[in-house]
Length: 466
Image (cartoon, rainbow, N blue to C red):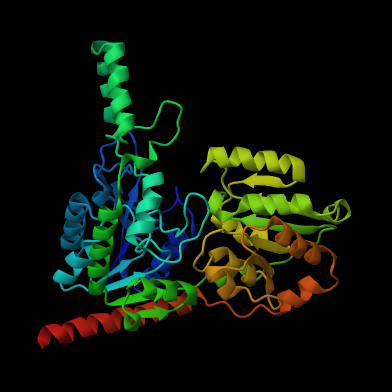
């Protein structure tokens, strides 16, 4: 069977949960005899947007589309005719039996209509809330407030204060700047810039946001909600890795009878012969991408709140690239200097087992709803209990007092209380580790997915015959 996997970013430049899962699933499907092709985007600021690269990663063929996150209008953020043309060409050249969508950000929602019209069944794995939320699928506003639902007023207000940037392509902008500086008087340049800032097409020179009243997004959000809710009807089956995510997106408008819960599968062999390395201190860790919505600052602050006697018995390690958000990284460095946390930087995904063999407690302090974090499953595979935010898919996986502890969202004080228990309460970590249940393997996940593919293809063929 030929399977086209569609995802926003991919390895090796991007190693978040959805990218890692897509790679592992593609590997296992290929091992089972299926022909897999990847379609994904990547930023190359020195190349024209929509340039194509072809190649293979670890034996899996791909089509890589240059997308520099440049948009000329708001509707291009979710439906892009040029990406549609690339998708059509990929369907014609690869001729897939199934389209498996992992993520449509930087692609186009009209892929669903195109594949459906071509008679190709669509399976869509839901990794976050991008269908409902135009702000990166976080369902969280700039000020940290969570969104209960998507609506034109709330989403419009959110984008009004965090607008999409609409620049021309970067490499063209550099050339244009040279011409303008040479031929346009300084006074005229200042006047033009002032107008562009006023109408929201440029940020002020001090880097602050454009005027909040510059644009009313409500009409555009209304149209986005209409288009997305229409296009999702073309999907044959949605897979939600967490019950919370399933509920949220059914509330948004996904057809409940076509959204099934099935958690991620994992390469359990990476952890089969894991030997835990003892230490004199309790080793607490964060593993992931250090960005604000992941709440790493809450963890570092909480560690600093521990009594000195408790902190002397523990150590905190933060694993993750500090290059993703340099400004936030500086904030973490300041907090770490005070609390004594260690910022370990980027790590190879293949080393996750080795890292977890030296971790006693994993902390997932995310401020957004999360889906079904891969790091929680990997910690469970390594028999490491987890302390997580009492929110979203994290609370689906971590049962308070059974296989981990939960704390209130954004509360460094409540997290500090949980960490103190892990350090000082006799036998607690052992009891929590004993409460960890079985984690689904990637072999099981691929077999289940394969059955879904076959059922969808058979159903579509039957419909054609009828």
